[in-house]
Every structure is written in structure tokens, then in C-alpha cells.
Image (tube, rainbow, N blue to C red):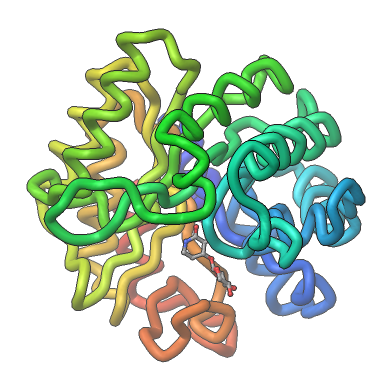
Length: 299
Ligand code: XIL
């Protein structure tokens, strides 16, 4: 095959990309994105601050720009993200307790109603665990509403769009030996045992000096899949874009039947949130990097 999306489709998987609405008028960008990828995640446009800037006033202008570009070009869409400590609008940052809990529920219902039946996977909750060796939840206004905020989010999401796959998504959880990975594993196992509706786990896979790729990532993917959830690589970028490391990640996903697909977090290095890491598959001029060829060969 000659594109990433077509190559991934040979094994029933997708190869996706994060798209920024503000770049959709850049024809170099849209040409590559349309040619190579068959799944899209909005890089920022479906986040809480973008979709509910004022309490009770939903705005899907930018989100729909990304969504419509994707669907008009035949791509599926991952929803990102509904409940998160970051990129909250000011009104939400200032809430706490039962009022915040209700606002979270209302937000999930509002956004999922707009996209009901049209989003394959939703990142319902993002980044709820803290880094380091504690294995604890991250302190946040949402966490302070009670430890059950995550399962409430998932139950709300299931009712709001019964056909969407509901994912928990996090970073620095690729290494099987990390306390954060084990904490996430214990939560998913508990949710499955108690019937909390969770369908998938997203591994962001931002690899860098602080979070280097480890070959036990495959064990991580296999271990979560064995709990009865799908897994996906949701925000892949690799500092320095080592072709070998990119190929390893692809092979790890391909080795796990329940690995649904891979999404890279941007098109060209210049589009990356960490552009100084030159972590992506395309150069700033749109040409393919060695990592691109390694990925295509691995798929
Ligand atoms: C990042 C975007 O790429 C940036 O444009 C934005 O300024 C901050 O958020 N984990 C996530 C993503 O789940 O939403 C983040 O995206 C990167 C880390």
C-alpha cells in the first residue's frame, strides 16, 4: 500500500492524525492529511473550553469545522475529550463540589448529544492519574468532587451515546512497570468487574527523554486488552522521530488483536505542540521523513 491509512486498513485498523481547524486553509497540510490518514482527532476543538465557553452555551463551530472536514473526506472521528482537568473554561475552573459534578454531567450530555451516533471512540476522561510513583489520582477540581467522578462520567456517556466506544486516555502509561500504568490498570479492571461502562483505553504515547519508549509497551497493550477493552495509540509523537522506535510502536499495536489503530499528534513537525522535538512523520515542507517510511513498512 502507498498510504498510512490504506496500509493500516489491510489489518482492519485506522491510522489517524490530530487536525487543527486553523490549518485547514493550508493546502500543503490538507493534501497530506487527506491522502495519508483515515481517522481524525480534533487537536483542541472538542475540548471543554472550546465547546462550552460560557456555562450552558455550547459552541461547536470549530469542532464542526474539523468534524465536517474529516467526514466529507471519508475519515472516521475520535472525540477528544469530555472530562479533563486541563483546558477547562474559566467558569468551570471556578466550580467545585456538587455544582461542578453536575456541570461535568451536563457537559458530557451536551457534547455527546451534538455528535450522537457520529463519533466512533470518545475520550470520556483524560489524564486522571498523577505522574511519579504514588499511583494516585491527580489532584484536580474534578477529583475533589469525589473519587467516583470517573465512573459517573462513563455512565453518563453511555446513556448519552450508546453506540460510541468509551475510552479512558492518559500519557506516561506505556511502560508496564510504571506505577501510573499499574494504577490505570487497576481502575480498568475494577470498572470491568463492577460493570462500569468502559470500552477502550487510549495510550497517548508522547515519547521523549522523560518518557522513553520501552519494548514492554506490547505487554501493556496485551494486558489491558486481556481485561476486555480495546486499546489504541492516541497521540503518538516521538522526540527525534527515530524510525526504529516508530516501527516498534506500530508493531506493538499490530501484535495485539484489540489494538484498533494509531493516531499521530499532528502532520508536519511545524504543526506539533512540541515542534522543537521534531517528533512527527513529515518535514516542515511536507516531505516524508525516514520515520514515515519505517511506519509504512511496518504496517
Ligand atoms: C495539546 C495540544 O496539542 C496543544 O495545541 C494545546 O495547547 C495543549 O494540548 N495530552 C492531550 C492533548 O490529551 O489534548 C494535548 O494536546 C497533549 C497532551
